[in-house]
Amino acid sequence: MTTAQEYPAGWLTQFRRGVVAGFVLLAVAVLLTAVPTFLAWLAPGTDSTSAGSALKAAVLIAVSGNHGGLVLDGTAVTLSPMLITLMLGWLAANHARRLDSTTGFAGLVVGYTLITAIAASWAQLGSTRLPFGRSVLAAFLFALVVGGAARFGPTVWAGLPARWCLVARAAAAACAVYLLAGALLAAAALAGHFSQAGDLQNRLMGGAAGLPIALLGIAATPNATLSGVGYLTGVGFHLGGLTHISPFSVQRGTLPAFPLLAAVPSGAPGWIGVTAAILTALAAGWVVHRILRTNRESAQPAAAGVLDSALTAAMAGSCLGLLGMLAAGSMGTRALRQVGVTGWLVALAAFAILSASSLFWLGVTLLRARRGADGHALALPFARKVGEAAAQDEPVESETAGRRLRSTG
Image (cartoon, rainbow, N blue to C red; front, side, top):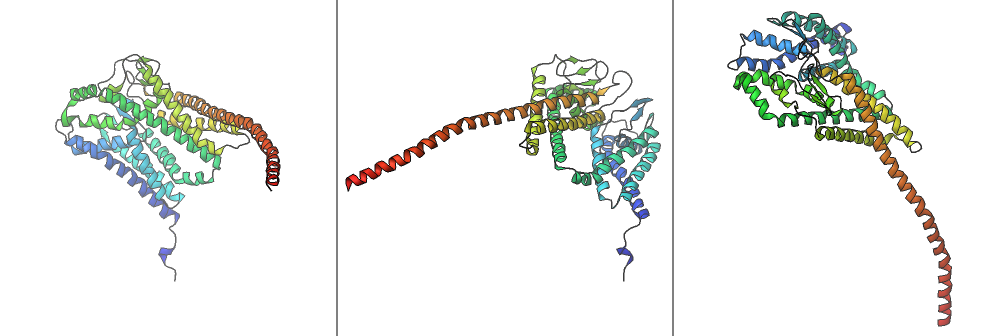
């Protein structure tokens, strides 16, 4: 006898489960964000008035991670800490993969959008609020794109030709090289100005009362990494309308007293920045070249290498440009109206740099192969002559040995 438990859940049940998963997604994100906000509320010397204010602050920060922005004292703020975005992306991907069907995933998108609309209507701290329309639209797109990539990405990946999979791996490796180099550059710059950053922290709010500022700086470290990527591609990054930093020029205006901004260089650009950009480009191109070597046909190595390098550079440049665009934004209309990199410039610069670098390593490999082939071609006639001489000498030596034996006998 068949029990009811053996039948699969209907589409309505699956949809409801997806809606619940969307609610849980934002609830977990708010809970994780509330841990540092409540620590800041408990810290002595802070201006927090109630625990409800700390919870509303957690909702504001978590929902703004969808890149819908905030409204602060009537001014739109579109810059979002990328660490919050990464946390939301990780949660959305996990929830999307656990669902049983596409209907459940649709419920997840709907549920996440609904709970975001409720949160955007409730969370308001004085004049700080979430823009309702932009927050709802950003939540819908975030759940749809990130959750859809996590759920359907493996299926699409399995159906791709081997060549495109290899190109995608090479592009991901190139992005990883630039992100790692950007993180190391930002960390080295902050370490070199660590005393200035500490002075700014103590000047603003020392001790435990400065915990909110420190937490905000930690949440913005991925933004600093993407600014480092923009620096390494030669495009540079902006900190307002008067400050632009690149390996070739430094234009610095008045900056806010924020500890993380102490890492911004103030002197003229030196050889260190240009050298770091060149070494990063060579390293990324070498990684791309090493990965793509397994996909080249021996009959047409140059043509296959050029095409694969161009495709990889285009894919990696698009990814870095998109990440740079997400990490950039504005914090007002005046001094900090533009913070971060220009995404499309980073995409174009990364495409040009990776194409040139990977083609450089391809040329080096082809040149070595040609020299090896030329050396083999030169050695082959010599080996033939030696073999012919040995073949001619062998019967002579055998005849001489026979004569000696007959004379001895």
